[in-house]
Image (cartoon, rainbow, N blue to C red):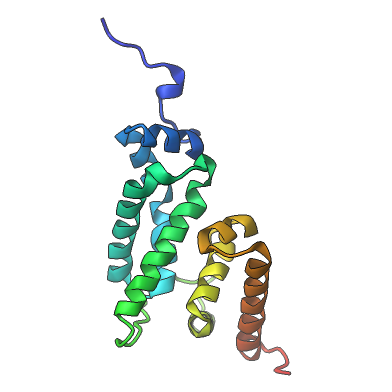
Length: 199
């Protein structure tokens, strides 16, 4: 006789992280696989933005999820998987950067730069867009690693201030302060390239 799956055993895109974490903690490999598939692209993008090297980001992504798999039984807040895994990714990125500190940073290949979305092909506008993107990359790189990580978690990955506090191991006021300072620094760096006043 075929065993029928109960409704809650079927994993769908709507299955909340909390349920997947509980099931993965009980040893269900498909539940962890679903968590991995749901978050791997965002974690890889975050690591690439921090490390600024595609191959190293791929390795760091693998290391992040390996650690997450090993440490998952310790995760008590089942609904906090996303900030928790970003916290692991942040630690892996800082370890990679410490090891590679003596090496110059790579900005990546031009093929990795997303093409600007333009209403019509305009070579001059495309050049200006790429130039501005380069200035943004430089401005982000000028931030401290911790401040850049916090800002990316907020702007690129949409984490709440509370989630960023969890991921970074900071207090909520510190998160707000660091993100505010990061935004001020970016604004000051980019304003001259946007045609705004420099003072």
